[in-house]
Image (cartoon, rainbow, N blue to C red; front, top):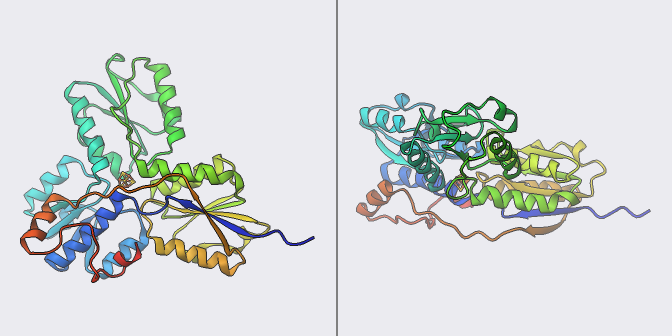
Length: 337
Ligand code: SF4
């Protein structure tokens, strides 16, 4: 019998979202404008390659604000921070550039608004994730974390008539809806957020994976282990019919054993992953006979966010471009988009 054709289904959209692109360009522009070192609180985005590339260019990643020398420049990551972090930065006289994704800021505003009206806020998200810490920090006395469907039974509220749910932006859409269903069984008057908290990029990447998964013997998701949306993509693939699924930072992590007997490989990447890493995976697969690549397009994306206002003002004053357009001089991370 002739060998069945090996093929790759390539998800679209995949990789960089508008919030990640903006955060990475913010650090690049800060390095150009202020010179190295530029401090970055937490990983600017959850991707090993992006972080090590920016480190080579002069970014210094720290865990907490008090590790930044007084008066230095600090960029706050795309995941957002609690207000207390801004207070700490002010106390240290830091030049702060806040690269929080505008879609995370939207959830922060919702938290503040519902706390002002004295609602109990049930924040669906992963315990310990930076974004959840930042959002909860906006209204610590009103927020209760709900870490998935299994956590619903433990939730206590003050007044079941005044309860709203919000969520982390990078969750599994289906699992979150299940958590909401269970919460509503307990609190029938539970209010929905004014608009989706799970962001467009997370939803679109999951949609593409759902379309491809039933045809895939193996799904390879390019992304780092601490990237929530990347980890979710593997789970979504397996839930929707992919026979096997793995998360890899680099092509070199692909185990030949995964490819044994595999005809169709699905490939996608998380919202913090530069395209060059996907190209590396496609080259690796091509070398193993998977040269036939077809795109599976679930949505078109054209969202671009403006840079944070603080750096735009300083770029303008220095006569430098303050747009998200990449200059020819941009190297490494910029060139990878
Ligand atoms: S995944 Fe969504 S919320 Fe997070 S940075 Fe990207 S666009 Fe913003």
